[in-house]
Length: 247
Image (cartoon, rainbow, N blue to C red; front, side):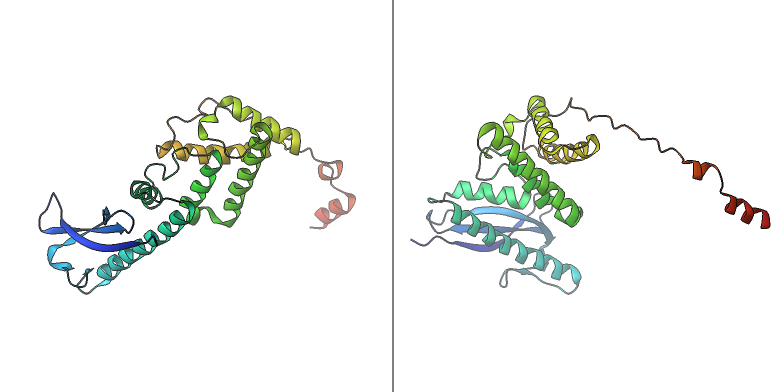
C-alpha cells in the first residue's frame, strides 16, 4: 500500500478573541484510517478575512500575500519532511511522524529518534542558524563535527554515541585527542572547543538535553607573545636621519 499524506486548512476561533481566526493545518496519513495530525500555523487574522472556499486569506495588501505564502511554504515543508520520514522507516506511525514534524518545524521534542546523538548536535545547530553563520563558520562547525566523530570512533568504535556521554571527562579526552594527533596550539584548540560548547549549549537552551555538561570546564590561557623591536627599528638609519635633517 502506498503511503502518502493529505493536507487541508482549517480556521478556528481564537480563545482570547472570537472575532479572530487562527489557521491550522490538518494532515491525514493514509495508513491510519484518516486519523489526523493538527498543528497551528501561528497565523491569526480577522474572521472576515478567511475565505473558507479558497482556504486562503483574502483582502488586498502585502500582509495577505505574505500570510498565504507562509502557509504554502509550511505545506511544502510538511511534504518534504514526510518524504524524508517515509524513506527512513519500514512501518510509519502517526505519533512518530507528528513528533518529527514538531521537531523540524518548531524545534520541539527530539523527533522520531528518542536519543539524540553527539554528532546530531552540530547538524541541528547549523540547520537552525544557517542564515546567521555564513559559509566559513558553517565549515568550521562541520570540521569540528568530523573531529568529534573521529574521537568517538577511536574511543567507542562507533560515531553513533548518545549525548548522555558528554561530561568533563569526555571533553578532556577529546581535547587530548586533538592536541596529540593534530598538534594544535592552545589558541586553535580553544577555538574548536568554543564551537563544541556552542552546539551543546544550544541543545541545552532548547531543552534537548537536561543539563549543560561543560559548565565547569575552562579554556586554556593563551600566552601573549611580546614582539620586540629590532635594532634597525630602534635606531634610525643614517639615511633616515639625513632625510629628517633635510626636512
